[in-house]
Amino acid sequence: MADVAPDRRAAFTAERADMLAFCGGLDPVEWRMDSRAQGWRIQDVLAHMGTGCRAPFSLGAVKFMRGNDIENANDLMVDTRRDWPVSQVLAEYRRWSGVVAVVFPLVGGSPLGRVRMPLAELGRFPVQLLSSAMVFDHHTHLRHDMAPALGRPAPGTDANRMSVVLEWMMAVLSNQMRTAAPAWLDRPLAITLTGPGGGTWRVAPDGSVTPGSPNGSVAQITGVACEFPEWGTQRVGWRDRDVRISGDADYAEVFLDTVNVV
Image (tube, rainbow, N blue to C red; front, side, top):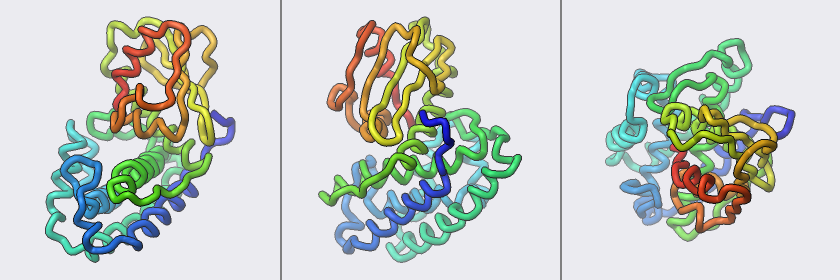
């Protein structure tokens, strides 16, 4: 990872602009088409994005902070909007994503940004990483659930946005691994993601995932940064993407088969 912290505000602003531009080009039939997010139409994916942006400023925040099934909470919030016209879904997203773009960077840059808060079963995170979570959500849904379902080209990205996406994914993965504490995880391994925004992370026997050198790792996993949001969320299998292993391949494969960042 680069020594300079990623610009989360710029990353979210860019992802929001891409989402609005993409949605602005859809026709009524496309809005009702199924996305690649199971059970959600294209309209429902945007409804999810809108509720996600609105939730921190409403009582819905409690469901995400104190719940134990964030996917179910997302489904329930989308269900309340299934009969909304597209114009209303788009208006909610536009309004509340605009609020997020202004408020989250201010909070993240204050002393409150370092306070750790719960996010359902995903664990605790510094408040400043909530912007990273939003960037990840936008990036992944737009590029892997919406655009390919419609046969439309996905928008590009850049090193800053990818670094923010990976920052969130590795934070979630670290919490997941530490909570699961699998018995087989008894030696360190490393993940290197190449390309814009990439870097190297070390997975320790205690499950923590931190930026660092691969030195001392018994297995080295190498992939492509822009592909990780797809196979790291199990939208596709890692074996179907450019993922290479050196060292203890059996050990690395067990790890890779468990990776499922939500």
